[in-house]
Amino acid sequence: MTDPASPQVPEDSDAFQSLIQFLYQTPVGLIDANADGRIRMMNPMAAQLLMPLARDAVLDNLFDVLQEAVPQVRRLAAQPAGVRGVLCEGLRFEGGGPTAVAHPARQRTLALSLFSTDGKRLTAVVHDATQEERRQRRRVDAAAQTDRLTGLANRQALHAYLAARLEQGAWQARPLALLFINSDRFQHINDTVGQSAGDAVLAQLGGRLQALVDAVPPEPLETLPAPLEMAITQKGLVARIGGDEFALVFEPEPGPGTGAAPARALAAEVLRVLDQPYVLDGQALHCPASIGIAYASERSQTAGDLLYHARLAMVAAKRAGGNRAMEFAHALQQQAQHRSATENDLRRAVQAGELFVVYQPVVSLHSGRIEAVEALVRWQHPVRGLVSPVEFIGIAEETGLIVEVGAFVLREACRQFMRWQRQHGARAPGLMAVNLSRAQLPHPALVDDVAAILQETGMRPAQLQLEVTESMAAQDAAVQMRLRDLKRLGLTLALDDFGTGYSSLASLHQLPIDVLKIDRSFVSQLETSRHHRVLVEATVRVAQSLALRTVAEGIETEAQAGLLAAMHCDKGQGYHFARPLRVAEFEAWLPTHS
Image (cartoon, rainbow, N blue to C red; front, side, top):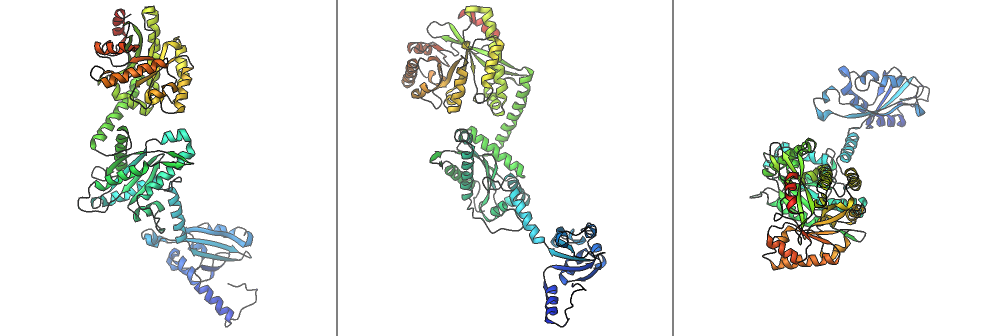
């Protein structure tokens, strides 16, 4: 490959022999060609790399050899050379030739660099970039299948791993369990200490899970993404599915009576580990979890099935109170299908006018006269008939439909209240009570929506009482601030179901409330339990000391009403006075209690 104009090196000289040895032994293909591509000389490595591309095993023209794999080389060689005579550098192309398609083992990636010094001669350098390409592809795959925050496998890697295990049918010989893990209080952490702290908790959570599967990173493999490598060398795969949801694929060693016991034991250990506090900047944060367990089986033959079943079990664990594990059962799928059908019907019902409001009177325990009325939503399904609120309120809260349902109830109740004011004057109830759902309270437009409905219906704020449960009011400072924003409208706030939540008599003074409603579970045992009588009497006294009015819920007997009146409880409601009534029923009841 020497320039004819340069001094010639004698063929018998040591320098010439060294050059020949270099050309023959170098692992890189070197080619000297004319400007038209005719090859003048090439070393053995060049012949070895290009031979699979050559037609009829002829290596006489570089352009012809590369025509199928890199057709642009002829055009590149004709263009003006750049700096250092570079025409192209590191151009990658498939170098396995026609047989590589049928024989994957023969697939290889070559890299071509082409140079021109005088416009008449070409120098080509070809090298095998197969391993380099595989390493690069592996790095890309690893990045695409790794969660950035935790370093764990992501949803894509989890699906790939499950699909591989399930397709091979390995679970038939070796049990495969999937634990679907969801934090119970992560949103609370984000809301109270911020997203950065929340991310730190998630990173620690992922580390704790990884430690449970003996997460010692193995030596890198060339053919598998990094998260899947770890799964192969350990007991299972840990993945972050998204947000505060994680998954742990577990494959215990097969043995007599293996069954579900190892997965249950692992779930119990996960619950214990995740229930330990997370310490950030000296602050201890608690973030327990709910776990759903599903097993590979005839009913869970795909990654999607297994994830779906495990998630159903996790949701059931969360609804049961959280910080527990539950296993998938077919009944959970039937319940999910029923809930889905109910959700679809409820969306239609909101628009079709199937929802309506009933009203339960609230009376004075001393005079027996009506003082207020509580609005309650009902659903008249065209096929199922009257659907209990227990069946659809929770679904409305989970899906966000409660915002629309709540607005409907508030608007309809306020309109009906104003009709009664016009029709009955002084005999009409003086206060309308409407419940606020736990999902309505955080809604940013809540205060503005309430103000707009009051203005639209002409109802004075003092005539409206919004009721929140004790557990909602005691949540955090943000919720209490929303309550104060509502209070500034001039309406009344009531603490509903008192005695069932997280607050106490000592903390009542911290809440912006006007009315305390004693839960029916206490009222129902007044006649038989001295303990409950003492609790109710103490509640009434504390409420009076804070200038709070009291309402007893669920009064069903004359004796209960008498005991509550003797304790100086202000008002009561329950079946003893009236069930929730439709408008016509209420108007028939009203003349006898006004």
